[in-house]
Each structure stands twice: as C-alpha cells, then as structure tokens.
Image (cartoon, rainbow, N blue to C red; front, side, top):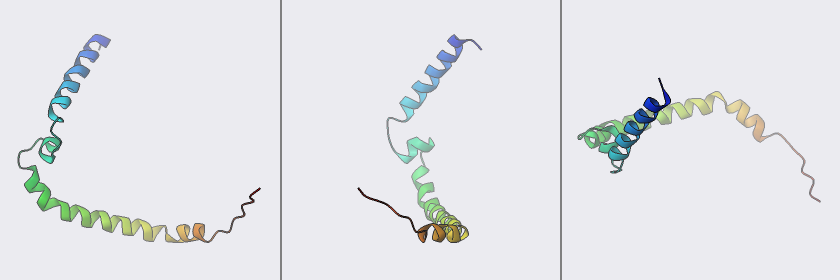
Length: 78
C-alpha cells in the first residue's frame, strides 16, 4: 500500500470520527440512538463487576501491599 493511499484512508477515517465525535453523548460514542437506554440497564451491572474485580485484586495482593506499607525506610534531610 502506498503512502498516498494510506494518507487518504487516514483522512477519511479522521473525518468520519471528527463528524461523529462532535456531539459528546453516549449515543454518539456508541453510534446507537438507543444507547442511553442500554446504559441505564448495563451501568449498574458493570459497576458491580468492576467493584468485584477490584476487591479480588486487592485481596490477591494484600500481603504484598501490606508488606510494602510496613517496610521501614530512612530519609536523611540535610
């Protein structure tokens, strides 16, 4: 593929996203006129899953995190 074709394709894609990202709404982001309805249904589930994953990550690394928290260090100020 030549540089000219790549440059033209880039401009087409850039113009498309400039046109569709001018309106900063969830509908524009998802390119769906019913995106707000979907967001209302899905957001609580996504938040619950994200919270659960964060809790699992914290539990998995808790000994390492606590080990770092209790590691003494010396700072000498002059």
